[in-house]
Length: 167
Image 1: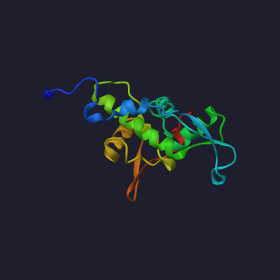
Image 2: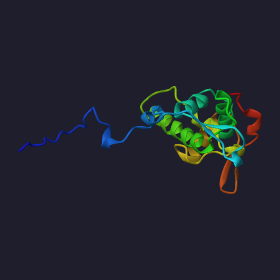
Image 3: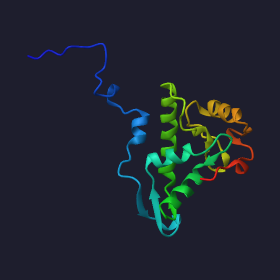
């Protein structure tokens, strides 16, 4: 009968609890990007389903003091692939993954991370699902000179349209 020895440290070969880190998830392209035919409501032509790293790369291009939105990311992705549009669901999910990967990198001591707080939802709304929630994202935006305003339960960057980066 084989005995199993319990060690105090996890095996270096396997991730803790078998789960991937956010940075590992971001690097897994899952055979993407992919072009698919658009449905009628999405327009005529092709829709690109981007790779996570493509979304992250666009988010990294937004300089300090500037902003972008998920819709701007989608437009840039569609142009890169000569498509009519980019998938709104995967683009949003991959932006969220990039945010958590950047937060994970920051906690590991890295200083050059994806500035996820500069990527807003449509209409200039702050994404409450980013690391630290509204409070942390608002603080980062205000530190860069943006004015955050509350409308009912949602938070927006005032005059965000005037501060959009060209992707």
